[in-house]
Image 1 (cartoon, helix red, strand yellow):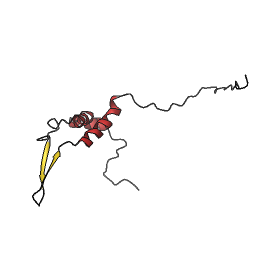
Image 2: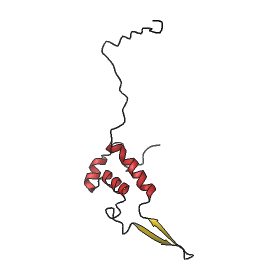
Image 3: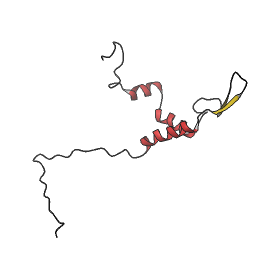
Image 4: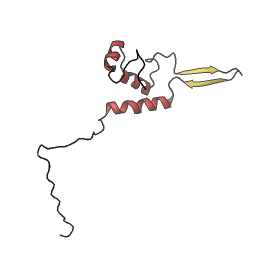
Length: 105
């Protein structure tokens, strides 16, 4: 299926340039969620109340613990050592392997 005319090709899109242009630091925002910094994110309070049609009220967290945990998990991969990547080794003349059997010795 071809891309519709006028849409962006996100594979070649410079996300860093856009984040810089908009003044947004995605890692900082993730860490604010992980810390539960509702003030820094622009929320009015740590909790909210919602009222249903039957008159009952529900108390909820502005940033629920599940969301904080997911934000911490997602940001950890940027803060700690990256996962090891596979590396292909090659030599111009090739590699000679010598296999010796030490089981009988």
